[in-house]
Length: 422
Image 1 (tube, rainbow, N blue to C red):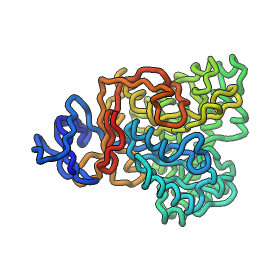
Image 2: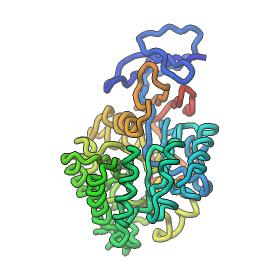
Image 3: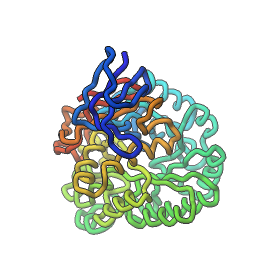
Image 4: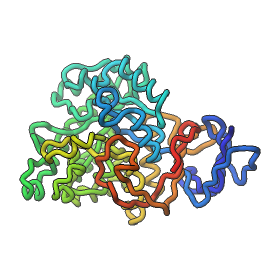
């Protein structure tokens, strides 16, 4: 049966209009005023906003191999609840996604059982060990959208250059988790006032910045599409800004937690604030917002990194890095950036939907006739409060647990199919 979304404020070509949307099977058949009901299933969106489904360029589904933390079903359910219709899964699973068999497993399971679309990011090097280039050409044939060793940053510049040259021949992005291991050491939080106060090893911003500077030069030499994951320092953003001015093919993303949170939250040793790169200073946080506004930062990505409760409930130095992000992303950003006047709702949608969709070259991220019906309906006045009982993710490691946020996802449609309803 066709679905008719009526009376909503639809995000069309960068502005909101009071229109109806007629969905036929997977696609948007018609957008217009006062479309008549001809025995359609009617969804009344009065008072709500209809947005293009969110697209997340950076997430961890832990499947295969770490399904005690998350799996494709639970992860995509949580994503749908957060308004995401497409998510890109990083390759640090067990086994590493460095071959076509693992790519095919993820794509098939997501297609058969998922609540959002899953795009696969393949490993840049075999087993993400930084020693030998992976089967990039074969994985591209099976549909990967980018390559990355994610948390395993390639330290050898020669190997990284060769891998970038190879990837550039396929015009596929290389995503880097920038971290110089010798500088980062066994650090736990941002190097500075709080690491000293708490007696925890510090991770300096330089550990991130030096790899970004290196890889920008390598990208310029190799003509590679370089993408910087989760930028977190003012200096890192300056480096990317200058590289873009020079014409280097570089893009970057920022996470909600680096836009909203700072290192002082680690003061009570809450392991839900332990993330890599670490939460930085207020100066860095403001630089992330400024970079988002001036276009230096291209996308917002969650870096959804679920961990089992027993892992996060250990001592701070033993707990793994990572924040659970799907279910809190939109509401936290809307509450703490849009409602405070830091950014517009339109910019938030651009960075969460339209721009990342274009980056992975998928025909999504916009509401248009003939496009697939990937839609998120939100009530901007309603609130959410995530609890260990109502979260759909297997893991609950979020600093937003038990906190009230504005901007509730009411319904999510992926390929025209309702995948979430509040």
